[in-house]
Amino acid sequence: KVKVVTRHGIPVSIISDRDPRFTSNFWRSLQNALGTRLDMSTAYHLKTDGQSERTIQTLEDMLRACAIDFGKGWVNHLRLVEFSYNNSYHASIKAAPFKALYGRKCHSPVCWTEVGEAQILGP
Image (cartoon, rainbow, N blue to C red):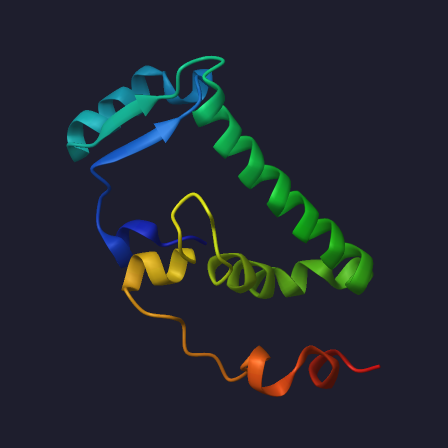
């Protein structure tokens, strides 16, 4: 369960592709009731589509690696994938999403630069 609204409030706008699910009367009514603006990406707009596609590709790669490493138990590690994604540098925003949102780096029990990858992952 994602609790975006309870954690961050109602968004001012939501950017979506032109999927018919987001253009239905239900979604329009909900947007009006919440005072949220739904912005549709321009079809074939390389910058918007490229950013979305790159994010999707990155997440697919991360999930694929998780499935390879953990087999059928990959779903139990989704929070780790989420944590990793949110704390990795993103060139488009020039920061990690966590830092962009909270204005600071995430405090983690593991500091990669001090401990070193080999000690964490093993030989």
